Image 1 (cartoon, one colour):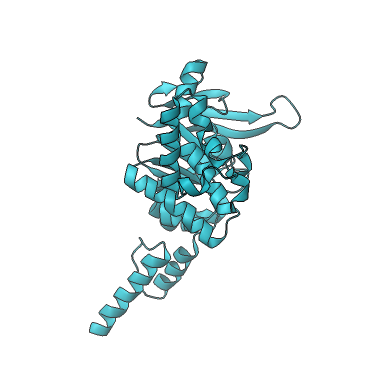
Image 2 (spheres, helix red, strand yellow):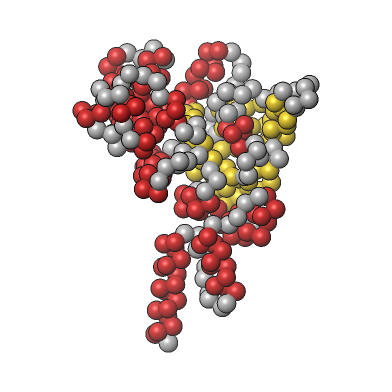
Length: 288
């Protein structure tokens, strides 16, 4: 069953001079096993949207359901549903607080009343998934680790809850290129191996092209486009600027090559796919 929003609206500081509409009549479904990217310029409503997925924000109009069950019925139901939807916020390492890596990752399972043996197993499993050695770092302070390692600890803390849906708000922000590839690679492998549903909020269009199966564009609190990655980034490339976005560099290069007569397929959206297409075309040309 999916996450579903039905006619959801939300306004910050209503009935004040600082009133701001963040979401305006949003209806959408996040299906099982999807990798959905949510994009849009700053202030478009992306972060407000994902905070409705596990009840951190309550819609002022409309409703939110997770696996067919409505949020905000009572505390017991909300607690159960929040275990299904793990949210990793921008700069998640800023949310680390415990004295050891183990305690930080174990906080969620302990807070939900799991027995000690189950907690330890979940910590070990989550650390293995994100590439942290239990024996090496479990008893260390998370603040003694590198920035990339700290972010992996924060991700492991969410994964230890074993969510069905993983929602990430700019997970690679502030990381160097190697750190971005590492953290996003681990997230993508989780999605592929376990069919984990992933919702990725990002400004990085190259990440969108490389990872997402579906792309949703937000502007001024509304969904202005929702379709496959190819449909949004390639077929609607001319519309992206009016939404405050630019197509990925590879998409722009491919479009220019097509304009010059290169028969590149519309599926070309990443450096690797562009290189393969060019080699293939050059090989056909040489053969002729």
